[in-house]
Length: 520
Image (cartoon, rainbow, N blue to C red; front, side, top):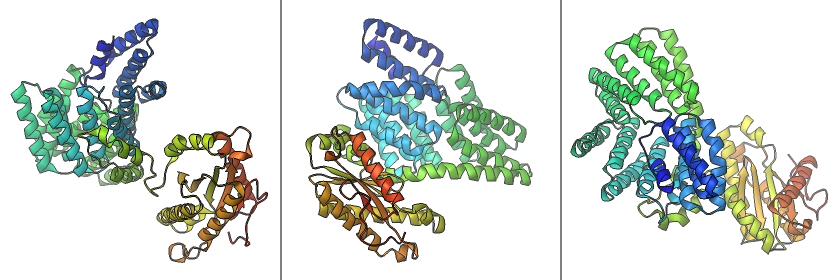
């Protein structure tokens, strides 16, 4: 059963119906044997197949418990595979940031138990995520590493797949000359090893032909691509929609507008059925181009507006991904040796550079158990929405970054062994080890005052920036846990807000500490 599962796990070419039946059958047999690892692997294989077939909800519903079991049982190989499936789900949903984060983790977790397929393909998919996020230099490095590893491990099939993804990434980045060079390598490699070009490879070649204005050749290539897709047993959920979109572009170049519209309509139906946000953005753009080519300029303008709205939604998701990409520069040739740096990057908030919730969830429980003088503080900016609304979200972001710096500087003086976490939005958490409540409340009040008295005028044009702080200590509850401690801090933060803001509330201060009347 393990060997049969490995064939499912390490397979690029696939037949969804047959492979789903096989995975479900293995799950039943493994359950009868009581082998939980085999059960989890079989369930993940099913989630992967559902994802690739376009059933994203079905995939997500199956993967949660598998991932939880893998983490709890330290099943590193299985955990790496779950992250790769998660990356695919988020890519289909158009969430580039999450796709990149899960791709990073899928490589970080590779160890001696990883198969050759995993070592090669996880790196290739990371390159895909980097290219999708706009970091082509980093993506090229990873594609080359994956292709070289495939060559050294004598996996020409995987080398062909890596070259296909590489060529398409260059094409998508507008690097058509480089795309042509990689495509030539791809075709030469296929000829040398006797491979028939599959649908994905033909789509890549057809797209490059379009950019070289070889429209008739491109249409023939894409029609062959569709034939291979319908006759074959592979391709991801977004593949057919992508192929049809490429075909429509070739047909528009030929002036075959009716055929182009039919291809676009078929692609649009698939995008709606499978929630393919990233494909739909380009579909709107191609529809506008097609209307314009037919002289239907009012319709072209309306389609362009749809494209712009969809593009804006996608761009907002990609902004955070680009920040994470800057943190995701790493050498994957020896991924295990870089694991510590990966872990550090995955535990930082990309905008402020502070620790994030993942770091908090890993560190706080141990501190609570070991430090009877631990104090935590929830910090929330007062009237932050007013800054965003009156000035701009960019100014709001810059205020958050400056507040983060002031919190870090202040905490270093209060509790050098502590840390600051961005909880999300305008909310932060400070952990102050070895700092009893009374001393913590007094020091935090000074920190509150330092934030208030900072020279904000050049940034906020006179709008004040203040914070409210809720404090909780291990001694505030008979059974301290992370949940109870944060609940107490939240309750005190709520009291600070309703007590007038710009104040510190703890069990020691009662209704709050605020040396001066609040201007907020």
